[in-house]
Amino acid sequence: MAAVETVKDELKTLRTDERFQELLTEVDVMVQQHDIEAVIVPRQRRPPNRLTGDAIAYRGESVQSHFRPAFFTCIDTANNELTQRMSTDTTSMSVYLSLEQMLVTGDVDNDVCGRYPELRDQSLSIQLRMFRNTYPVASLSDACDVFKKMVPEVRAMFVAVEQLVRLMLVCPVSSCTAERSFSALRRLKTWLRSTMTEPRLNAVIVCHVNQDELDNLDNQQLAAEFAARSDIRKGIFGTFNL
Image (tube, rainbow, N blue to C red; front, side, top):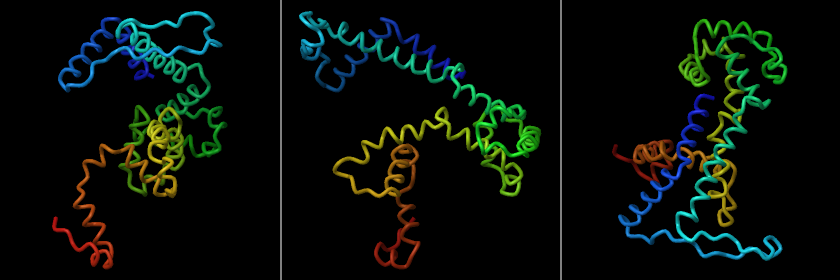
C-alpha cells in the first residue's frame, strides 16, 4: 500500500501544465535528433450527427491544446484505477491484507481462513508461530526468499505456511507477470500463427515476459547443452567448443 501511495503522489506531480510542456519540449528535441516528422494536429473527423446533433465538434488549434486533454486523462485514469483497485475498503484487498498480517505476525484469523479450504489446516497456527520465531519476515517477498533458501527437510516442517505463501502469490495484487502474459497473448498468437500448441505457447509467453533475462543468456552454451543430451543430436549438430 505504501508503494501505491508513492505512485499516486508521483502521478499528481505530473498533472501540471509545466510537466506537460516539458514533455512536449522533450518530444521536439527527439524529433530534431532523429530527423523524423514533427508532431502535428491530426485530421479532425466529424462525429455522426446522431451523437452530436448540429453542434460543432471541438478541435484543438495547436499541438498543446489537442494533446493536453489526453495527457491529463491518462494520468487521471491511472490514478482512479489505483484508487479503486487498491482501496482497503474493498473486500478482496482487506482479505489480502489480513493474509499478509497473518504471515508477518503469526496470528491466525479464523474468519479469513474459513474463506479458503487450503488454510483450514489445524496445524497452521503452530507452524506460523514456529516460522515467525525462526524467520521474522516483514513482507511476502521476504517469506518467498526464505522458502527459496530452505532445504527440503526444513521446508517440509512448514507445509501450511508454504500453502499460505502460494495462495498470496496467485492473488491479482501480486500476479502482475500473469497479467502481462494475458496482455501479450494477442501479439504472440495471431491469425497467421494459430496452430501453436499449448506447451509451446506457454514457453513463448514466458520468454516474452522475461525477455530481459533471456537476452543475458549465453546462446552458445545453450546450444552445447542441447546437442549434448543425445547421440542423435551430436550427429546432427556436432559439438560446440565453449
